Every structure is written in structure tokens, then in C-alpha cells.
Amino acid sequence: MEILYKVHNNLYVNLTNKCPYACTFCLRQTMDRIGESDRLWLEREPSVEEVIAEFDKFDMSQFGEVVFCGFGEPTERFDVIKEVADYVKKTYQKPIRINTNGVGNLINGRDITPELQGRIDTVSISLNNPHKDEYLALVRSKFGEQSFDAMLDFAKKATAYVPKVVLTTVDTTISHEEEAECQKICDEIGATYRIRPWEE
Image 1 (cartoon, rainbow, N blue to C red):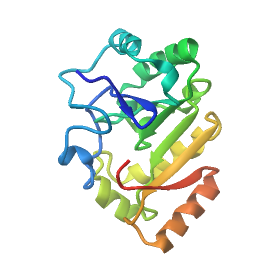
Image 2 (cartoon, rainbow, N blue to C red):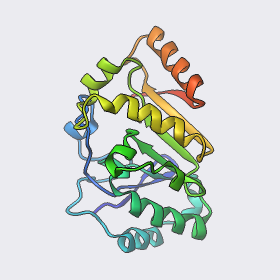
Image 3 (cartoon, rainbow, N blue to C red):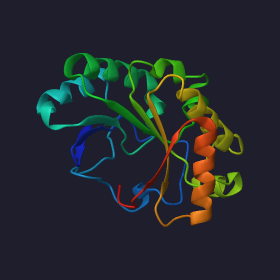
Image 4 (spheres, one colour):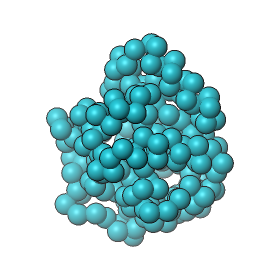
């Protein structure tokens, strides 16, 4: 099983294939790998111990950041994130990022943002679109209509506990006018807006 994999100069952690979204643009529909990975579909979900053991296989000095992001929504295994993040901080003193769809509070049935404090340095949330109806049509969330507002609420709450909260859209997928609307949303909640290239 491929639990850790390299993308550029960062080390990514693949914890789960579960996701409450079925995004129309999801890479999982067309490929089974990203970056320097072979196959990100997991036979089963790795334990905390298995994840931690994988770090010994890498020269951690070559990585700028450890990123929780694989073929699933990482906050589906939030308790594992916390334990692994604590280990990485203590052992390697590396910055830690979570790439998320932003509905971790709905997934876990509680506000998880206070538990990010001291563990997570950056939360990167896929905003995708500034309009609720278009967002919902894109992500096809099992949580339905509450998803968009829950994602923005998560982002806003996270700004109190995480040094950097980033909301992203993908280059060329929305208009420049919509990008300006996304910037306004980010300004209102105190997050950074980033337009990222399609390949990432």
C-alpha cells in the first residue's frame, strides 16, 4: 500500500479513500496516481503505527512540508491525522498542511477546528466556485445543501487556530469575475485566496 508519496518537494500522506463528495472533476475518475506515486487506491486504511513506520523509509530533510492529502478526504480519519501530526512535529519539526474539502465538521459531527491548533500550519480548502448552487452541482456532496455553508464556516473557524487558511480554485475553471467573488469571500473570512494550476 502506498501510504506516503512525494509531490514536488513535499511528502504526502494517503490515509483513506473515503470521501463524502463525488466531484465531477475528481482525478480519481481518470487515474490512480499523483506525483511520484504508483497507486493511491488503498487495500485498507492504514493504522497510526503503519503510517508512522513509513516515515523511516524517507530522508525527511529533503521535504519542505508534510501534507495530508491522498485519494480521499483526510478529515474522514481526523483522529489519525492528530496522532501522526503530533509525531511529525515532535520528530521532524516539519510544517504540516491538510488539503481538504472543508466539511470535516460535518464528517466528524463536531467542530474539529480547535484540535488543529499547534498541529496544522496550513489548511487548504477547495472552494471551487463562489456560488452555492454551482458548487453543489460540482461536488455532489452526500451532505447536500448544507455543504457550501459548512465549508465556509469551517474555513472561518480555522483562522482562529491555524496560521494559514487558504481557499483555492483551479485556473481556467471559473471566470475572472467569479475569481474576484472568491477573493471577496476570502477577505470576509480572513483567509488567503489562491488560484492553482490544473495539474496540482
